[in-house]
Length: 144
Figure 1 (tube, one colour):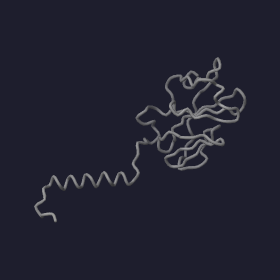
Figure 2 (tube, rainbow, N blue to C red):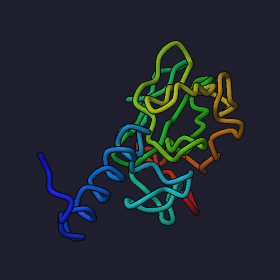
Figure 3 (cartoon, rainbow, N blue to C red):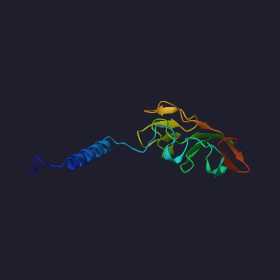
Figure 4 (tube, rainbow, N blue to C red):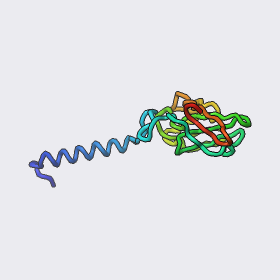
């Protein structure tokens, strides 16, 4: 049983713990509102070498999670790239299947060929990123 003479420091500690528990219960995450978060901007600020162009299937797409990019090849030799940072809350998408890009945080899905939102809560398309095949390699970002 606690005494009525409990110290203010004890109350402060209890209140601080309750506030942290409440934030955890709300699902507060490291997502950053689409700004790119602690790892940098949502789109490359310099050219990025993605490796062999043949890694992206014709009629399909590939996620480059480390580079935070999605690249599709809707027709042979034609590439399109988009930021892999969800425009809803800044989480990095986690998979590309059946022409759809999926975000694990809140369930948004995007078209892998256009970047267009297919299912919210995101309401803004994935930003397009310039991409080109050069010498059998894919280069994405400015001046690509």
